[in-house]
Amino acid sequence: MTIKTRFAPSPTGYLHVGGARTALYSWLYAQAQQGQFVLRIEDTDIERSTQEAMDAIIEGMNWLGLTWNEGPHYQTKRFDRYQSFIDQLRQEGKAYRCYCSRERLDNLREAQKAKGEKPRYDGHCLTHTQPEQEGDYVIRFKNPQEGSVTFKDHVRGTIEVSNRELDDLIIARSDGTPTYNFCVVIDDWDMGITHVVRGEDHINNTPRQINLLKALGAPIPEYAHVSMILGDDGTKLSKRHGAVSVLQYRDEGYLPEALLNYLVRLGWSHGDQEIFSMEEMIQYFSLEQINKAASAFNTEKLNWVNHQYIKNMPREKVADYLLWHMQGQNIDMTQGPALTDVVAVLAERAQTLKEMAAASRYFYEEYDAFDETAAKKHLRPVAKEALLAVQEKLANLSNWTAESIQQAISNTATELDVGMGKVGMPLRVAVTGAGQSPSLDQTLLMIGQARSVERITKALNFIANREKQA
Ligand code: GLU
Image (cartoon, rainbow, N blue to C red; front, side, top):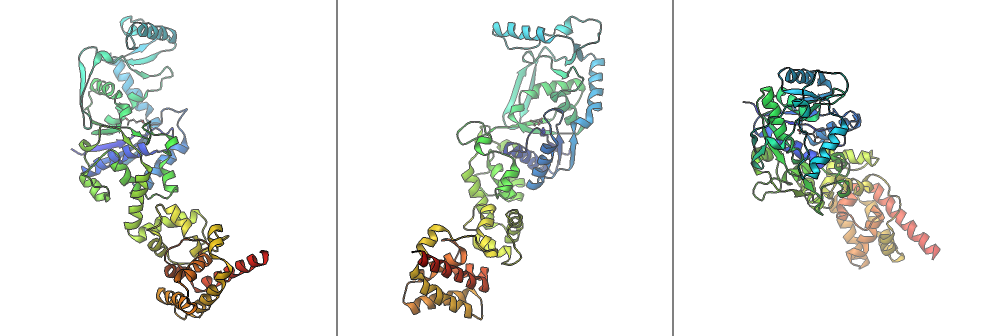
């Protein structure tokens, strides 16, 4: 039997990290079983579904590399299909029209609550059969009254719910549109879904869906309900915790591989291994190893994972992602080093690609102004002599290599009989505008000879102006 899983988001919001993790688990299970993965857009809530959200979901899935074998299917394109099964259930006497007014239902609920009972529909329109009439009605599914529904959840073990807990579910609204639980059942059946992996917020729907599947004579899939993700303060993850669209994580400079790696570990483990290649994730993943307990999102850990990927992934690959951020920050890259060189020198220092792009600007463009603190400390009149001397040596180098640059700096220090820092720090501020950078020889090498020399002049002018003002 081919394993088939699905991800079935409602396009009422973006693809957030919780949804992405559910999608990942579902996708991984399909990959691990050499199965198929289906993307289904549950857009029946027409008022709250937006094209923007649909596009963002698909863009997010693509960015993460969670490819689907089938779909996207759209529920709004399948209304005829749902209708035919509603008709069938009605003909078979498994569903019925309910004419109960809102007022009657409200009173019923109040009376039940007053008696301390769980509110549920009392089956009034089933027992008081009346000739079919026009006017407002909904269609209800005749849920079995006896027995119970039992299913084995791959994460939570066996779950049993008494049918007495379940009332007659509305499967079509008064405007004729089918409801969520009904569409899911028909879709999972039609699409041959063998394993439903979804959020635990749907666990109460599962017994109802199983009863519907049984009434339709459909096979019952297996289920895995994945726990919630909490913020680091223990409350449900929300925007407040920075849990936003996965595309925002892209914009903030996370690598999709790193985000997936972080998400797979958030609620699943394989010993104490933290970093997994995609092949390893697929090889080791199992639904049974998913945590029953909720997991807490931890941005520091995500940053750590991201940094591991920046340091250890092939440079060419990191450079490809970095390019997108360079373009996003409008950095003019027509002159300057190869991006793989930027990755090589900045990987240790940047936890995100956004930081890396920002930190690499001076390799390509003039910086706007000197960092104030750095300039105050290092671009002082005493630095003039060292800057002039090192500038001359650098300008005269016929070979622009890390070694020759290093040699020019140390010769200057020796000649002036000062420590290396007295030459190096003013030089660093001169060529980068800032007080921190990768090693000076690498930095100058990548900035280039002409630019380095020009920037030293700029620093000397800055010092001269300062002297004038003093
Ligand atoms: N559309 C539902 C949601 O976004 C998921 C339904 C399901 O996975 O069964 O919460």
